[in-house]
Image (cartoon, rainbow, N blue to C red; front, side, top):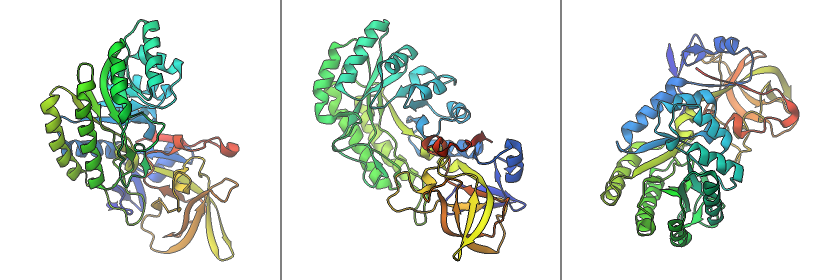
Length: 409
């Protein structure tokens, strides 16, 4: 048995020319699931990632899992035994989180458009609501009184700074997320008058970042901002969620994030914060970094053709299952994800192919002009880095094709 490392993916085993996921060879896993396409998530790789991260982060830092990255119930159940809390972005995700052993006091919900019914559910469940606006704060107070329960709230801050070099910026400038930091003294003064359980702050300034220096700067600014706001807070800060942003490499030339460097710097900032708030929890909120590299998307070649000199592999999956791999999920210029022929891992004969999905649109591209082992009808195309923002981040109903399966192995 040998180790296969495609670009910068976490190591998956290879046995008898086949990719092995969770100790199960690919073709056996196909038979076990009974269909393609499917997503498969390697349980041990997720455990290893969380374990390694804990070793690199400050000992008293709390690690939360953001369900939006991958809300598959089996994955969330696994995470409940590995992390310190959950962050959800809908009541559907909230129900998945509450079905685990994670206590409700360690679950929070965020999002700029929470309906009254959603807020009522969150209050009744006893989870923390990350407040996105002054109007939402008033609505929560009304519903809290109507329900006869004291809502647990944290103020989500739209900071003046942004997470530099991040794939998606969530803070700085005008944003629909959170309350502008310059408005916070007034909002916190109003909070004093409301019968709510103030937990602290949520500061999420960006995502998918591979630069340790950028993350360190944003974390320093987040903690400094929270310390400045202390004088306006009712009863201090119980929880400070400084967001996430830890990225994973997807494309050629990208290097993995130096999390040890981030952890060392964060330890210094947390020491400063603990001097003034010794009992407060400092939280990071991660999704993609914890599960992204532990997942693969598998589809089967159903046709092979040559069109004016270009060889095409046509598979039974596509962008309706995996929008990101097609380049239509935030890429300005499309780049290829790392891809393999999962049952021909050591085949030396190679050819340049374009892999397309089953949809009637030229946007449905899995890989464009990639050099891969020669594949035939019946072989299996594997897309790495697919454990996060895969199935639930894709237009599954597009053209009414069959849905993909998911499995944790």
